[in-house]
Length: 453
Image: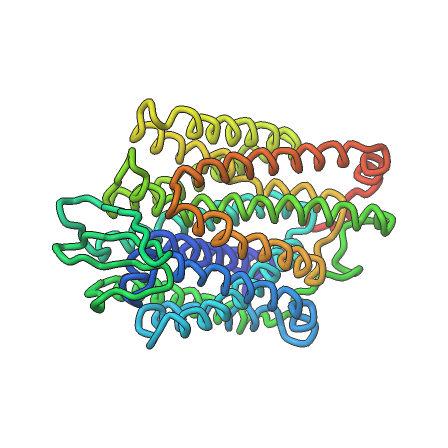
């Protein structure tokens, strides 16, 4: 029988493997959006509603997450979510219609909500006051999955005639559509309409590979579960605080964390999911599908490198310092893209995307690391935060997609506005964390877990 420390590390490896598959599932959405729309003979706008369906699923699972984790073993829930991830990947491109895909992604969203709650609670229970650095590393692994996903998909994306993507905005009977030239065939992606023929996309193969990776993840979780089937729950017994903050202070910390993560996720998904469409539709760019797929991968590559760097820096610098540094890079990069895109479109797009990802990447781990300085996260608190986060994600198709086909420049406007909003919330986190009451609480409550000292 392996030691307690060995099991803890093995469980941590599996939790990070889940983060990889989660990152892949998020990243392939943007990289395959055009092909999936073509397969189901629907517009990009109609297909992008899957993001809203996924958000609704996350909201639902977050609402019931505390109840589910109260009665079901946390390890069992996470294993079930990973297995469902494999099944859903296989079904993504073979369903009868887009309606079925929306229903499927609703349940995908449910599994993602359960995973978010379970991973954060499990990591904090087994690593206690050291969990901040593990949150950073877990988010690095999420970004790694985001890199791998588009690279898996890229060889199977449909080619484009003359290696170009053409969008023509046409008004006819108050309907707007884009005419897309693909391998000599013209497919009309009508808003709410259909194309004349079924796509011959090979993207199903990529989703099979992703499903296989989920399957390996599920198998890797069974072994440590057989060794230790403990149910990891946050409780007073597992708390590393000598005393808790007053109720109003705890609620304020949770509210600020929820707001910060909600805006951050909206920034992240809004950029990563739509940068592909922006790159192929902007009149100054007209990237090919392959170029846009690599641009998406660049986002996740920079995102991941940033988290490697942040994980190391978290051992030396405080959370507030990491927040200030990352937001300086983030705001500078969105301003660069906003005002200098026309001067050198390709260079600014590639460089700006890399810098946006690098500066935005640490928001989640910085936010959670900030919160665990003052409170212990529970399934109920994480679930409530996930409800708000999912609500933000659901707005993306309406904020960005509904306008990007009419004016690709809106992609830049929306991301600049969101970056400034996120930075304002980050400032609020730092200011509240330096209030007299919270500084006193952090000083008084030293860890009481002897095996982690």
